[in-house]
Image (cartoon, rainbow, N blue to C red; front, side, top):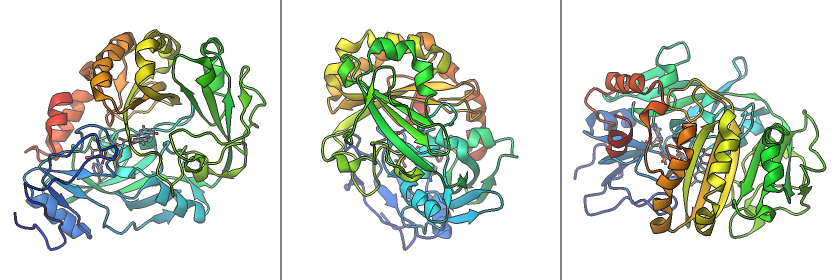
Length: 423
Ligand SMILES: Cc1cc2nc3c(=O)[nH]c(=O)nc-3n(C[C@H](O)[C@H](O)[C@H](O)COP(=O)(O)OP(=O)(O)OC[C@H]3O[C@@H](n4cnc5c(N)ncnc54)[C@H](O)[C@@H]3O)c2cc1C
């Protein structure tokens, strides 16, 4: 197979381009391009019959896959802060941890981050990846500009004044390759993180709203079955209310807690020690691997007003879930207007499962969990494993399909995942 441009990494059909981060999904693509300039990127996209962008490979399904893939890893990060508009723009393949370190160095901050700083901004935004916080939207909500390389190889800027903006942010890679992203930023801030252990399910469900409102970002970890394994993680800003001594009977832990196997060093500092936002908002530290990747992930967004009923419905399945689970995390997020976002039109709670690497036990459980969450209109996380998507859960899905036809009339960026779940 001939190279499309001199900078392209070329594989032939006998060579695999490898797997996702968790080594669960093997990409079917046989060519992985790695341009080092926007011109090369444009030429690659214009020439390829079928192509999609590959981010940092942290999704768990075939969402990113195509005949050819293009990575932005070799493009210079080109991080530019605009103090006037309080925005930062950068090459879309930049990872959150690298962007955050540069922002912090310059006295600026993001409003929120996901658990993992290693993921690419473009890949996270494309799937409505989120952190937590009743007042914080998904990470995609911070987007204030995108620059696409469209199917013809042309550059197209999309900003909030464009009618297409709300459809173009959470794009699932279906509209083109996002080459640059602009995010809203704010002055840097400091935070404390404290983990509380010993909350009972009864106290958790009776006080869920008060608990998630108790700090800037709140995560609840549980294995569904055992009260003693449920912990509440509060991440508070130093310029807001101090963290409490007690969360409905749960007491602060003095030592840092591990989330995965391995050293506690891979988690950001807990114990209430003050530190910069980018070293407290993610659970994991940038310089360390979060785990050996021996896991699967699933997550469902449910409307906030149904959170407690949804949690009761999943807890009723606890006996079937717990044996195959590493851990569940519950997080909250504010509503947004991004058409394919899990929080479109509603404040939401996200119910996440980090499963053991046992696909033959886990995959049959997904339709069971989805049936339990059916009354609440659950939306699956696009980048994780799920059984099916109910199209009616996305009131603007038909508009998104029309937008994708406008951007990409010949379906260059369509793939099996999109045909199955969106088109
Ligand atoms: C350990 C771990 C922790 C995680 N933590 C969280 C979390 O806290 N919160 C959460 O919500 N999710 C979380 N996720 C899921 C993860 O954030 C999403 O799967 C995200 O999409 C991964 O981004 P990526 O760069 O790896 O994208 P990939 O998996 O490489 O691709 C995902 C999608 O993005 C598209 N894409 C990537 N780059 C571009 C581009 N430049 N232009 C257009 N489209 C593009 C791809 O085509 C594909 O459709 C986690 C995953 C792992 C493995």
